[in-house]
Length: 73
Image (tube, rainbow, N blue to C red; front, side, top):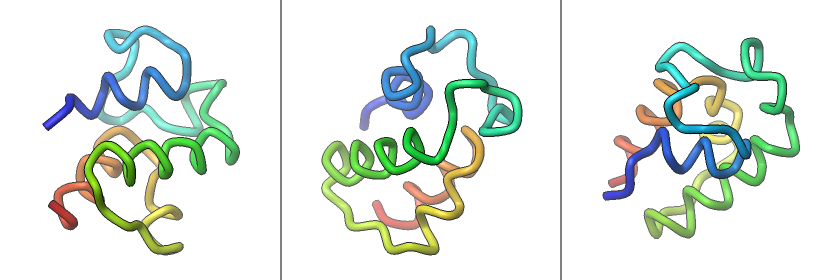
């Protein structure tokens, strides 16, 4: 299973070591609504899962992304 932090960092175009579990849209300048949609798409492709709208709305932090993925794999 790919490392979640690395996946998020690749979408946000920032170094993975710059992200912490509590980082999200409020603390990472490049994490906006478009990047959230891009992240959802990458999660679906990488983990071969389908996210619904409520899952996508929960993609608000590194730890929340992990939780959403864990519910589907």
